[in-house]
Image (cartoon, rainbow, N blue to C red; front, side, top):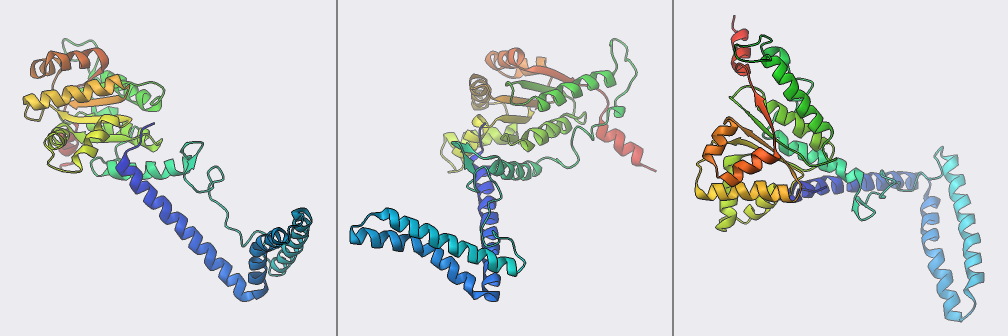
Length: 331
């Protein structure tokens, strides 16, 4: 699983803020208890100092430290019992003064077994969905809110299935893609006229995949090519990081391919994106208003062959849903 450096920094900031807030609250709790029973503060101090004091004394005298350790154990047990009794008299549990980690797996470090712990991954997922929400309506664009009834159930002349049947198949492919994401890489080409649901289903996939902690980058083709150009010519320090995000994220959703000016540089950048991600087995979704035939005419044979051979092609057919909804809202 790849992590977006920018999103992970935001996640770590929130993770550390919450951890500090918990520590500060625990310290305030301890101070309230100490104010009610000052002896507990003394016991805490004695428990911290007893071990170093007894061991240091035994080493200075050159004697066997084992008896000192035994005295330490007895002294600690006596202090612990006194502490427990005082807390019990106050109606508090024996571990009330201890700071207990929220995550027992990593003890609130955020890392476990050489990787990112699931508690930090949860922060990452939240921050990533915030990032995606700047471009997508993740709150309303989900698989549950996709409405097939906007597509005609009548079979048009020259077709074997209705637009609704076609979109039911497209919906099922996208839903399965999202549910099974991470088991094996896969690529989708979503093509069709504007207003037919490409953005909605792309957002639904992004929502589910990012919610499971995978890194998702959703951006327009024109903006991505601008970042690649800035990186090549050294115009901005952040451009290199943006290029790495595009090439290394778990899922790239390249929106509105074909709306950009198709220069030689754009052809080269697009090939780099598609080929690099295929070679590294990273998943990509391409959204476009162009048909596969149009794409083959517009881009190089190398690009066309990558899309034709490595992408599942999903046609979005029907009437413009946005216009249909708007017309039905009129009095």
